[in-house]
Image 1: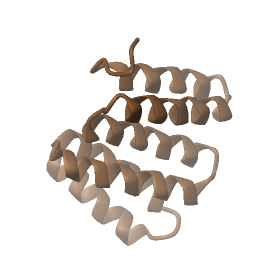
Image 2 (image 1 turned 30 degrees about the vertical axis):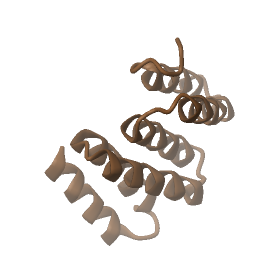
Image 3 (image 1 turned 135 degrees about the vertical axis):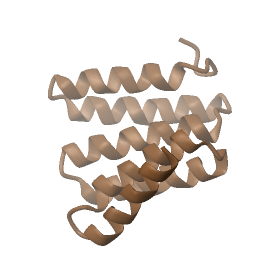
Length: 119
């Protein structure tokens, strides 16, 4: 699927999820990194990149790299805000909540509240 296809972000996320379900978290992260490069080069919208970064945050959480998860979640929220897309914002805030839950439960709860509100 060409990177400039509107469904390309979902195809990359599905491939990464497949790696994750098989226990290949490095493969999942590599797929997300490849997708970011291709989508950025194709001029993908902030909405698509936001979904991609949300997925990256979840994969980083699964492998216990909470610092990377927070970075990805913040990038996701920034892109979602630029896109003004409520679904992207809800997804980004959910990713932030998961990334923050260990170290900042209050901020995680606030992120969940916004996720629910806009979702």
